[in-house]
Image (cartoon, rainbow, N blue to C red; front, side, top):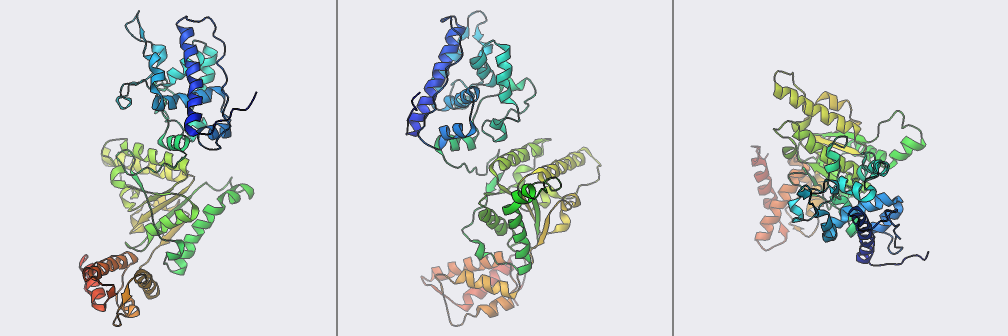
Length: 450
């Protein structure tokens, strides 16, 4: 058989959907006794054009016919929904749609037919029980469609809910297979996490040598974890992943360090918004967390819990049903963190506020102190050393020596200084500008400039 050459992405997808249409027509015509032949569905010639996207992914995974069909069926409702309209047919004997055709009602599809697991079973196996059982193996939780989050997983895969589950691509798979792009979700009600982004580089990180050395241990582990666990045979005694607690005063670089670790490792860092995770409704907190952990595991993200005291706080003695449910949430979170195969970073201003059960499971507890004079001086120079001119009366060494500021506070001061200088339509920073900005920063928490 000659190899089929198609180059354009849209033409490749059209070719695949044409095959799907042929299969659907064949099954439906046989069901309505319009044809006598119910032989096996035709095989699809995968186009050779294009190494990425849909066909590249199908070749890489070596999908069988059933898997190809199910994947394309989930795509068809998005890009060629009219080909599924035939499944809206009404049974004249019952006055309603055919049960065996499956499908779910979804207003988001503007009345279009949304195929379900039942739809796939009917189209692939008809009434053949043996074939149906074979196809149903694709919908087990351990199938890569769900382990790699290609299809949205049913909430209860072992119950009757499975057959009614809609066949939908996850957003990640949609971007990857149709647009060969990366999906980066943003904070919303059903996804309580936001990506941490920074324009700074690893060399911009200003920490004491001791702290930086501990941070480098995390980076080294993550870079060499596979060799340590597999090549060196330590997988039997070491749990996958890494858990770290960053603690110390605000503005000392905990969030920046998490972001830069992700950049160095080539991984996205997502900060969990605890205000959206914690719910007053029983079970919702666990559901919100599960959605983040499942996606993070598949996408190889770094998870960052800022101000972790709110969710990782000490468990209380059970005196009411609220205490019991709160403790269940902490226990659930403890289990998910411990089983997560990637990097989880918790940040807290006070280590003592975090439940000891979590602390015992951390591989690193890193204290981020207020920067010493040398680090403060470097921060001042790095912040004011680009584009701004310093007046002769500015002595950054004296400023860093007199004022004990965290790195985040220095950034705030520099912002205020920049506004002051810009208001003069100038680029010259005077000593008085810096002192005035420091006084303003100190006033936030009632401190007095020395």
